[in-house]
Image (cartoon, rainbow, N blue to C red; front, top):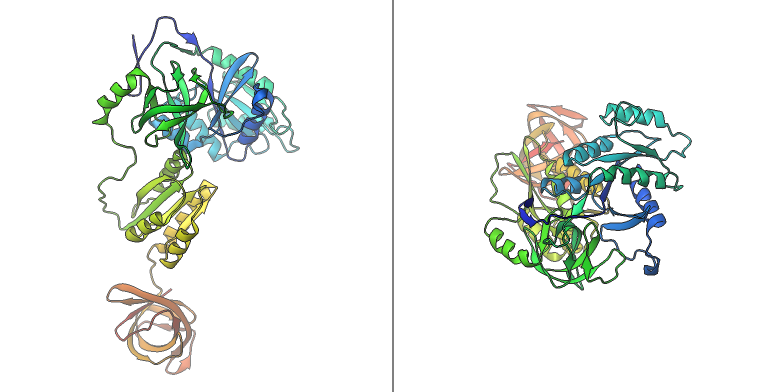
Length: 491
């Protein structure tokens, strides 16, 4: 019998063995997902000899009630959606976290949508029940309105009241999780071709490309060939989520791999072992790298080029998708390049040559690159909060959009000024101008500079405003010398 996962063909034996579940925790950003994952990890990780988790590989394994459970602790909604779009069912079950003091929010609804689209079962954790303003009944009603039919309210979705901060209800929630998992009959073929999913990837300065993976079938071993749709290599090193060297990995266990020649994409499936090289040869001619730049054509009025950098590939792809969402009827967002790593002079030079904005998540900007960008008026927006980067780019795009001027003046005469100030006379050809207004200087249909009105006169008298078809004299202060024939646009 042949079982297809995405584009990969995997052989199965007649007697599959049970495997442990892979769990993803989703919900609103402020509803305690991180604290819950921390509480689960601290109370259930059993490898005491490792001295605690020493690295983050995007997932970890616990033991509860004698059963192993793998938790994925990195994907936000966008990264999870990207995995799903690639056909990767990385999680077997989800925990939807909703805060009892805040109820169902827009991001909660997004999480519900992503979970249902992935077609995986889920349970609900009603968090922060220890807070004085917690309202569990209201939260349950809001979940019902959002299409989540809880047990006791006309549905079969289990829920547990918890306090991640106090550790309350965590064990009971894990009990519910294991009960829900039993219905799925999760299995794997220990003798089958090793196959799984990339959940994170990054470039390590010392070790090269590293990838965090979840194995879903077979047994993964050091020394085996490994391929995805966009990357290939040979496994040189494998580590557990504790950072300990290991020689083999069994399904549902998370691992860090070193040995890819290229950076794989988050959500890609991989196969390893004997089938890997054959699979790569078959697909090399068919598969193109996702999201890479294609020949660019648009009929949009305004095009904004953006270069994206992030600490890991999953974050880079998530930011790319969010930025693309800024496109509107008359605005095209063009991703010139995206990738992993710190912002360097090369990135800034690319921005200079393409007129791009640089958007960066959770990476450093080299001092020399920062100075180069400043000297060439290249905007770099960097933060460790992805939505702050998005908001900053959105505001920059709004700032760059052409504005309708309040008034326009044709320059008829100019007079010698002092330092950056200059006296200019002309006729108002459209709208009106007001004293202290901002000014843009346009010369032969191109913007030549900008400044402000320091003083406005009509017939040698100070005035606050002058309307169309009247002549005006202004005292201008700005960064360019105005010439006769220029057009001044006032805002």
